Image 1 (cartoon, rainbow, N blue to C red):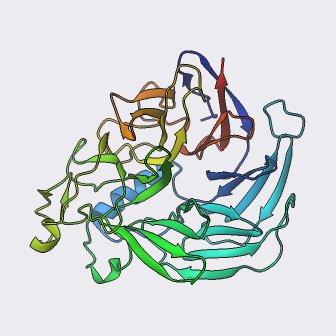
Image 2: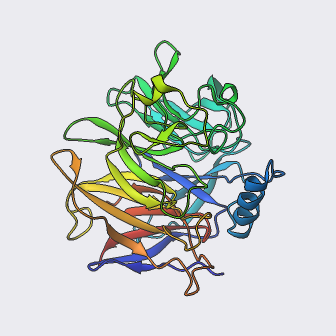
Length: 374
């Protein structure tokens, strides 16, 4: 179906900042106001099991799987009218790019198989120089690799999801996965910062406490609402349960247990509902959108594995004193068709645009939506 902008919260409006992209997933705003968009998707593959067959079939139907563009596109709104009229291929020949970061004269890309660094010239609309791989990650499974620089610019935090649903292919192949990694850009060394996070995608800093937060896609096969996807602070050395248990110490009896790991349980901070596929995460200071206090904006990509679909919207979770408080609010919704079997859009990355608006990537509509005060 054609892309539809969805339904806005009271006091805000939406327009298409850019259209006709190829699975736009993630964004980065450069210092000069250019907006970079990573265009990539889950590549086609043969199912590995009956459960996997259901997932692959449904993902194909939801346009969540196909040929990946493997590029980063630069968008520029030179005349300031809220629509990007300049479009350039910034970087191509990548391997399922997702996260991006710019620190000084170095541009970093989170490819599915590792983090790559490229030389960057301010104002450039294209990078042609070869990249330098800084760290390797195993591709496959949950393929996205989000990036978030540390406050001092000396480290990159990287989200690496699990290969499988619940470790059904053995834990050896899950080594280094289901974790947030910390890559030291000074020494080149990488370590696991926190683990047991099945698929941590969006990463953001909460400014009052300086804590790292992420949104996590939880496991499948336990019903529509169990367990919930979640938003959580990420503690150094913390273990959040995957695959042995969920939501604290609820044991998943489908998995061979490890009592020592179960004893380390950290209960996540905030439940986001079952299989909402919450991916995008961005801190919005109070007043970014009219009537919205401090909090986190979350792009919910939407479920493939529920009898009644959920997610498919951009939500807002209010924060006070560094913690989420109260119920989430919809910013942009209405991407599901009336029969809840057709999706007109799937929200992914979210960021604050160069003009202070909120930008949201929609990888089914192939649009970057721009949300502002009405």
